[in-house]
Length: 392
Image (cartoon, rainbow, N blue to C red; front, side):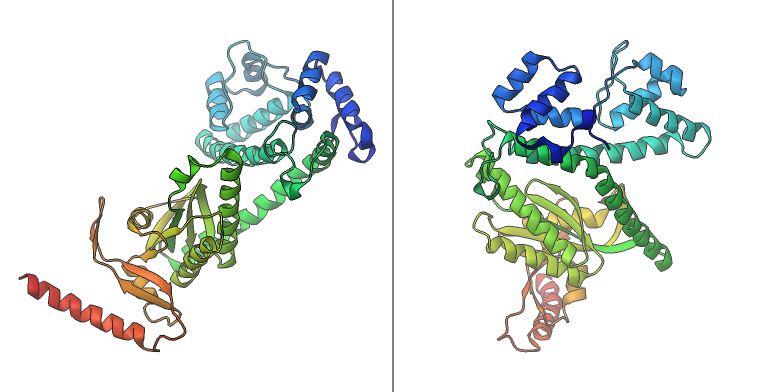
């Protein structure tokens, strides 16, 4: 992607603001708007907006339907799934780039290469993912612009508008290449997962884990936005490091909660323990609780579905702060592994699932006897046989 009007980051230097004002003026931004943006310290954001989408809107919905062959309803549905507001009748809202993309989509559908439903499914995923990427980029820029409470937070240094504009104009053009390369790698990983499922001749068997920070809701009401953002960033960094290090995948994060998946119970245990240990070692993070369940899962659009997902979520909800709780399947896979210790809990009644046997997972301590886990398993087996007789 080229930058408009020859905005060369190497040539900006100390005249960055004047150069950017000139560029924005050539794109139709009024002097009053530029003065206001400079006073409010939002000139870099305004510049980035025009750097990303330098084209002006030229077409309304009727013109796009005429040129692409798509109906107004088809374009409206596609626009909504991408996360855009649907333009009103007569509103000039589409650029030449929009027209080109919609024209290519029309050809794919007309040629039978892709169905309308498939296009909508893909656009929904792409729109949601790109919205998160864009929001994250703006967060970084906003934290550095004048008037932001987080300005200069990076390394405790004050950042000038000139530096922001130079940085943005240098980095933004390479973002499409980064996204394309990242997409190819994730596509390769997704294909390999599906191939392994096909070779096994059965549904995807894996371990699903949930983990969340205890007391996060209360904490969020006691600290400022800047501190809360720092806490969330720290938790996300810890999560991605722990999950990917052990071969897992972060399915999604919602504030203080993460959902992850991995093929083996051993790897899942290591991930959960690393998360618990990481939060204990961080001054800003509260204690973590986690739940693990194993079995068949359905993957769709990057998310996971099925009874195992529900079980892992319900288990996490009953876990005490600082503990990791696992289901029967994970227990059975780990019970002979001397690196872990499993303590039986009283069976809990989980919503929509009934009474479920559960175990608390922790690391083995160096001083524990070698066959302690086997002795515990034997005691639990005897207890399970005796308790039903006692109830009768």
